[in-house]
Length: 88
Image (cartoon, rainbow, N blue to C red; front, side):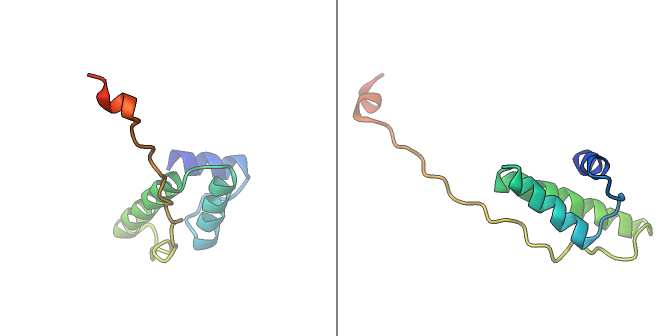
């Protein structure tokens, strides 16, 4: 949440958990070169916080539930060389 609040302040956005604003936040994270796993984690944190706000009666509904997080691409892992396999 701290990172989202800082983003809101830096971009002069009102602090709210709307679908449109959260999608813009995610898009800007991706454009800034953040890994898909980072963006997914930050969106998950926002969704959980929004759920808590609903349970506390601070929000009427969770608007963030339908936001699809970015897909995490699989990264190839280089195998060990024959030299590395032989070394003790």
